Image (cartoon, rainbow, N blue to C red; front, side, top):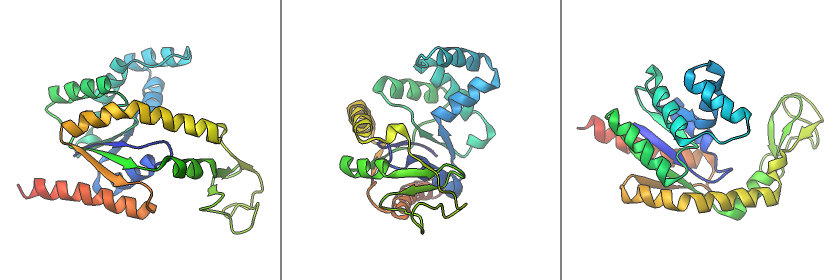
Length: 223
């Protein structure tokens, strides 16, 4: 089974993709991680991507599609894959479909994690991590047992990401909304779009996703 996860920054796509991978054996593919791995591999495609990234440029859709094509041929993708972070535009979605069609593959579901922008701002701007061990916390949702002290290592130094400031987060959310309107329409018209409520607890979101994937698997196994 091949899936695409869509959702705004902070919606938990990476967390949910990892859970789907662990439960259903569908390999989680983050395009950001793949780009870094390809660049480090020294492959012809990786060298080309690295040169562009080192120069501060954007890697072309052609390179990313080629990278995904190579990756999904690997043995760990035989049971399927979950794309996280790609495609972001309709032309990318069309190029992805063309590449998959040539391999006799399809995207079974595109699952959109729907979330409220204001809630996303609260969720993202409240995040911080222990500077010593990296344990994550939140101003409202996950405070340490003792204020100013890490539960895991007892550290007292904490970091917040610069791009987690409110105005930056709102800009990222606005860009996501503008960018994905057409792609959501594209996949809805193809009949593969599903939506889950992203404002629920993490376990409840996981249950929604497992229900979608489970129904599909049952249909396949049932013939």
